Image (tube, rainbow, N blue to C red):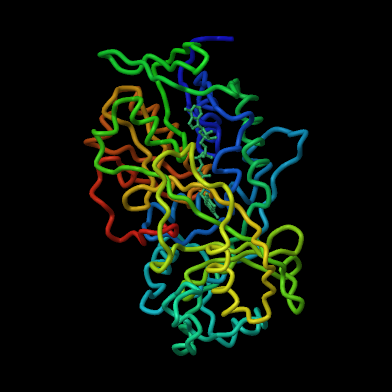
Length: 436
Ligand SMILES: Cc1cc2nc3c(=O)[nH]c(=O)nc-3n(C[C@H](O)[C@H](O)[C@H](O)COP(=O)(O)OP(=O)(O)OC[C@H]3O[C@@H](n4cnc5c(N)ncnc54)[C@H](O)[C@@H]3O)c2cc1C
């Protein structure tokens, strides 16, 4: 195997794979080193893969919208035949019920600015589309062991429910990353699996290469940290952890599955629902199930993880009950089996829940990290953004003082990548949650 590349990418999740694809499209010889046995097996394998465009910043909204076009025309984006077939985007639409005190104005303004369609729905329209729902407000979200959990509703949900017709979900995120790997390999990219980076080598000029756990040394002048929840471990290895204003750390998160109610088939008629009133979201899942996720409401303790190689991968009864019992307030006919079913995995959370797509103080070392539970959908745009940023910096551009402007691929505007800087001040307009 070649031991010298133009660029090594640590990780072959959605971020690492799309970066490899775009760099190799631009003529770079790339190598992804992945400690697991195949691509997309890290936190990407457990993503809910919801594709939506409402974010709290213009740039976040713009990369989500730009990527949406790629999910819609996946065959064109991938550009090669894949014997395993292509991942599919289920464009079901998404209903967002905004919590009391949180108006949709920012989201709507950003959608107007970018020309992304939406509709304002009344409670009546919501109940017509989702007849199994009740339109009561249960805000604020509570845990089932809170004596106030069964209190009567506090009123009605807001009458400004927003329907986003573009949105939906990808049913097989692992396949989607495999497709990207195939596309990247067709452009000359190399992927090496069961290969764990244990050291990063550098000299006074910058990055030299990486060393793997079996002692193999691989060299490249450019190295990208796309290690997902291991991003902070890799930054420690590179010696840059103390040189960034914004830090990342892993947060454990659970998602559960329950059957679709008898009276309403999620398989046939379901869509994605964000329910800020209940602090959760849900969407159809294969097998006429409902996938029940959480927006981490304040009542739920946050499960920060010190070592991303050591966390409980099993769902817990208490969190299963918290998430599903809350949903049962919106769907009184919801059936909740006694035995919890679901997945637990890690978010790579930045201080303000906005990702870091940037260079670093170590020449040749780049960051695609802090994806904060919400960047799967943005994979295609992240690949292009990082490829352009790397190319500009490697050609002498001073990104720290003059942030690279990246032309979006499908949207007629340039993206100011400075918002994703490692040295930004905390973005106060963020939701400080998985919503970004
Ligand atoms: C439960 C859950 C639900 C989510 N739901 C959504 C959603 O609905 N929509 C959305 O847009 N986003 C969602 N996300 C977030 C999304 O999944 C992530 O933002 C995205 O998958 C991160 O991709 P990544 O490539 O950066 O990281 P990963 O997929 O984790 O890839 C990083 C890779 O690096 C490898 N690696 C780490 N250390 C080393 C090393 N030393 N040597 C070699 N390889 C290494 C890992 O094995 C891993 O495969 C969710 C996340 C979770 C956990």
